[in-house]
Image (cartoon, rainbow, N blue to C red; front, side, top):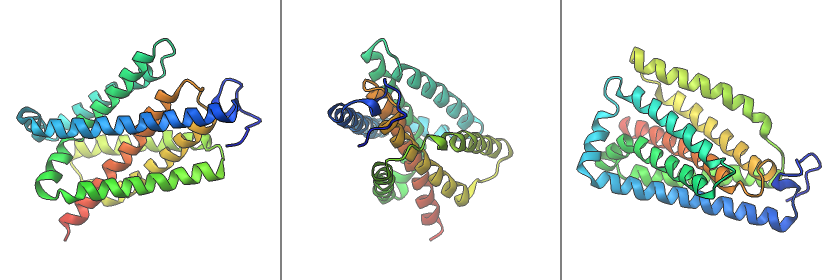
Length: 235
């Protein structure tokens, strides 16, 4: 780690090495916890007949649009709670809420994959982990502040959401090219989030930092699965 001369005196980048190291350790421990909770909930949900039945109806008609809307509301609430400066318990509740929201969102694709091509889940997890480690390595070794990528992510996010909504209303398939773009988008998001961990969070904001990383990694995982499923169906 290095001392950033432009860092806010309240950010972790302006703190001594031991505090920065402890912050990074806590961030990635909480990230591992969020991923573990997501995996556990996904496994439990898929064992419950009612949840499996729900999964089969989530993507029919305009149901997927409702699911996306509810997911966005849950994400905003989770973000607000995770950034709470008044209660650590509220911060943890935000992280748990987002893990749960993603577990529900993933239900249809996980149900399909486990039924027809369960090896895809393992393959997608390995690819996602490898890509995440690669992007993280870039952020840690270059030690650059990638916050300037926020503009690209904001515009790209609105464009992607618009295409998803349009595909639901018009009824067209976004296809593998869109999924590939979203994989790149997610990698850029992970790069920025990792950079923010090094440069912009306060030393007590490790829950919020882990939440942002988790959301970006989950996005990457989603579209890696989509690509693998598309390639599998073409075999």
